[in-house]
Image 1 (cartoon, rainbow, N blue to C red):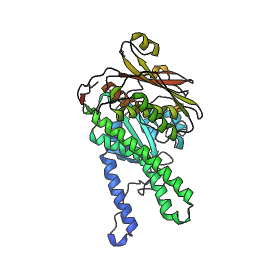
Image 2: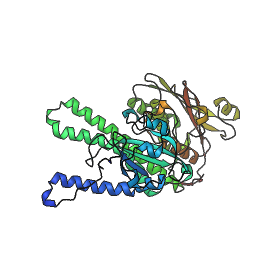
Image 3: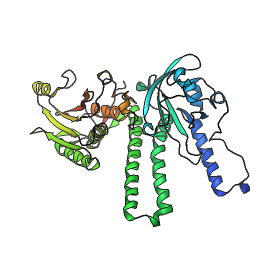
Image 4: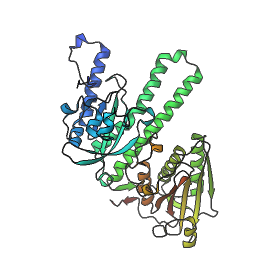
Length: 407
């Protein structure tokens, strides 16, 4: 099989023979090649025909294939995404067929490595946009799932995963800035503002992804610094709902609260992070025009707690219970127990086109439990989901630094 030209190949030339732009391109090639090879995650680059053109050391370790063996082969020959039978038919069912609505989505997969050992991985892919190579390539990342939920991220893994999540938004921002620089004088002011608003939105998502990875890295060290203050939870929730409503006009977010809700001592920033994450998920998986309901209930005793549907074995009164209810696609019952695990994403075709790495709910769980609360979900497929969390109403100051239990 003919081996495709690698986008990482570098033609050695003297400085006087190479124009300035070519020198910059070679510098980027060298920098990327070094980062690609040093990554702790299995990464490969494939072309439109799925022929592998780059295969790093972590991929060699994961699959048992040497780089010189993998180059020139199609990706499904190594990862057997849907078995050899489908691969022989041109990979027509391959999740990496390059459909744009699936870019940056994650899927679970089990393959057999060169030694005959079955390995479970989470795989993702995204367009590889860079001066390193022409258009039409995709970068594929495989995360080994074995023991991942209980294994802290290393610094190298953190950098690799964060870099992968930033590839697409940075490419989008670069495209907008290039257009503004080249055509700025010919664009109408309204068009310029639209570009700037889109850039702000994309940068916001990128910052959120980086924050999630940094949070996870901090939490994995075993400590979480909470800045607790006694606040009115209804007032905080109203502000969050108002902010989210401005960002998501396609849905109507409603908020109702019990009367005479006591103040609660919490880290406002962290609880806002949890509620914002639940609201983002609700809007992401709900049809346009549907309602999203946020409720706050005060459970003074077991009877009040029982009325909320909370599990009395883990949630203790008195407490405040916040719920976010949507009318979206729902979650299969057999997956509800896993949705708060690190890197877990629901295995459904309806979620494949949605971006995300499976960290938001995991981080939310850590934050709520650090406050002495509990988080859970109930769902009906095709009807919607309800995510709820509790916060102790009588929580006392247990110190600013909370030692998290390593699960």
